[in-house]
Length: 245
Image (cartoon, rainbow, N blue to C red):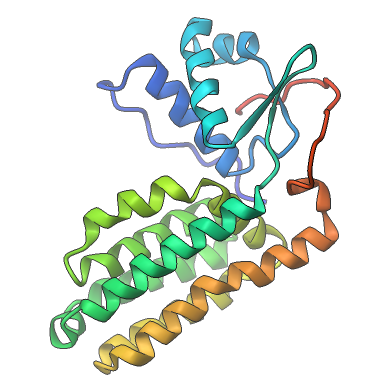
């Protein structure tokens, strides 16, 4: 699994207590520090994060709206399983936005920015050699933002990011269990090679194929660990709470 010794970026002092708690909880869920089925205690989290229970409660409400936590009266609050329908919806949005953006990029201008993309690939390879899943995931996000920027569509990343919490959890699971980082870097390299050759059709096809690999990974992970995914109504049993650390 990811290197748990890696520290998260410090929160902005301009964020409210609720926003800081929300960021910390959401990141912990997406990075699988809080795995599907993990109990969430408002009291314990408030003590760990040195805040009152109010921002924790407000954050849980927002995370519930995203489908990242489930609340069971008389039982407790739990990290939700990965919702396969939300994964599919997010993948549809991501593919539509990223592939359309790359189609719109000026081939010559995009070719002039491949140096930036290749620097990211080099950093990704280093993360792969170190087995640093957290670092690679962040670099992967940066790579896809850079692809949007080729056509001046970086602002569209907010739309993509808002929809992909469940997709990101599926991607994290694939890094841990099914998809070697080196294979993903080679897929990225194929995209950059096509951009450098000013072959937009090949670049878009390579990007589309790369984005769809998550479906193959999900099916393999689901077969091995079906409890990580939503499978209809569930009623968990209260267990010891896992902290964010």
